[in-house]
Amino acid sequence: MAGAKSYPTFNDKEWDAELRLLFEERLNTIHKQEHTSASLQESHEQIIKKAVCLALKKTESEWGKPPAHFAFFLMGSGGRLEQSFWSDQDHGLIYESSNEEDASYFLHLGRDIVYALEKAGYDRCDGNVMASSPKWCCSYETWEEQLKYWLREDRWETLRYTLTFVDARSIYGKHELVERLKQATFQFIKTQPRMIKRLTDNTGRLKKGIGLFNQLLVETKGVHKGKFDFKQIVLFPYVNGLRLLAIEQQILSSSTVDRFQQLPNEHDNVKKMKESFERLLEQRVKWQKGIDQYEHIHHLTIENLSKDEQRQLKIWVREGHRLYQTIERLLKG
Image (cartoon, rainbow, N blue to C red; front, side):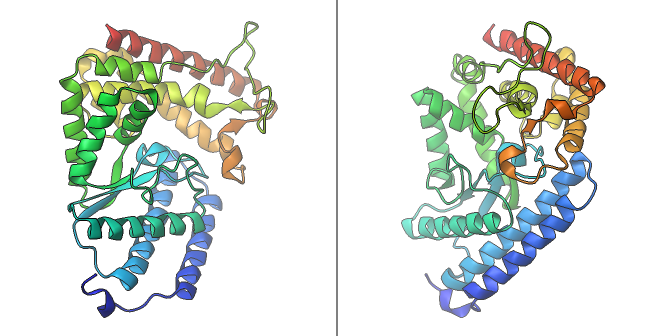
C-alpha cells in the first residue's frame, strides 16, 4: 500500500508491552474503583478507545495511513452503554471506499483491534460479531446492501443480525457513517409494512423467571446450574422492547435509557418505566461487583441476595415482561 514504508515501526514486543499496560489500566480503573453504571461505561470507553488507537498505530506501521474515512462502532452492551465489569466484543467497521485493496486494509485493522481488545480483557465474541469478520467490516455501500439483504431474507438469523446492528454506536472515526446507515435502514423497514412485526417475532420468546410458587427460577443444568440468568430474564425484555420501538420511531440513539427518553408522549405508559430501568442498571453494578470473569457476569447467586433484593428482582422481572408484551401488542397491531 502506498506510503506504508514511511511510517515508524511498531514491533510486536512494543505492541504487547503497550497492551499489558492497557490491561493493568483496565484493572485499576474498572475493577479497583467504585462505580455507578454511568462511570463504568465511561471507564470502558476510555480503555476501548485506547485499544483502537493502539491497533491503528500497529496497522499504520505495516500498511500506512487509512486509505479512506472510517468509523469503528460498538454493538451489544457496549453500543447500548450497558456494559458490566466484564464484557465480550461486539463491534464493526464502516469505511468510505469500495476497492478490494482498501477492504484488506480495514480487515487487517479489524484483526488488530480484536487482538488489542482481547489483551485488554474483552473476550472474543463467540458468534464472531467483530470487525475482523467481512460481515461486520464493510464499505458503506456494502453495508447498506447487506442490511437490506438481511431484511429481505427474513430469516431468524438475518433479522437477528439487523437487530444487532441497530444497537451500533460509533466511538472512533467518522461517526456520521453509522448514523446515515441507521437512517437508511429505518427508511427501508418503513417501506416494508410487515417487517416490524417480523423483527418483533424474533425477540418475543421471553425466558420465564418466576415459578408457580413465586420463586425465582434458576438454571437447572450446565455451568450456571443453580444461578439466576439476570441478562436474559431481567435486562433483555426492557432492552429488546425499547429497541423495537426505536426502530418503529426511527430513534437513532442506541442507549436503552436514551430510547426511553426520546419516545414521543403518546408512549407515556412506556416512558414512565425509564427510572425503574435506571435503578435496575445501578443495582446490577452492585450485584456484579465481585464477579471476576466474563463467563459468570450475567448470573446471580440468589442466596446472596437479601429478601428485599429478591422482592425487587421479582418486581423488575414482572415489569420487564409486561413492558415487552405491551410493546409487542402495539407493534403487531
